[in-house]
Amino acid sequence: MEKHLFLIGMQGCGKSSLGKRTAKETGVPFADTDAIVAQSAGGTVNEFFEKYGEETFRRAETNALAALTYARPMIISTGGGTVMNPVNRHIMRSWGTIVLIDRPLEDILGDIKLDRRPTLRDGGLAEVERVYKERLPVYRELADITLKNDQGYHMAVYILTRLVRERL
Image (cartoon, rainbow, N blue to C red):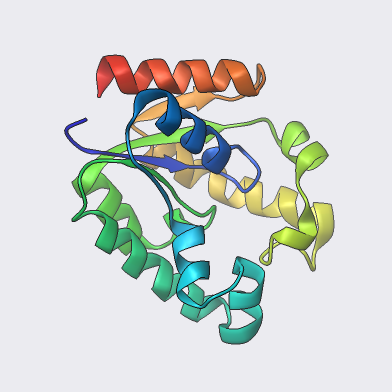
């Protein structure tokens, strides 16, 4: 790959699982900004949020994203809210191709584990729906490519793997 592949989308859309599997299939390195931020504090994303708050998490997320741009091209899974920061949008536009993993809200609601999603856990499923509606236009506007993740995990891996091999 000549440039990074940024995976964006709602929590529970499959960015991390699809990115990891595609990286394994293609031999392209993989990074997950949420995991990087959590590891920097020696815990989980939830623990980071509880200890430092969302504002500090978002700053650390931007720092992680910027640092990854200096690495060799890779598949980078971003947090669901990463796109809400204009600086992050600029970084991704400048350093790579942006792929929206677009999964139907009904599928996300059926799979999402709210206790592992600090920005959604207090509002329940109604909060997931509100955030989805708020972010979806931003995701769509930012994306260079949209991958419909509505035919199952294996089909989405196949499509993303083919994309990496053929287009990038």
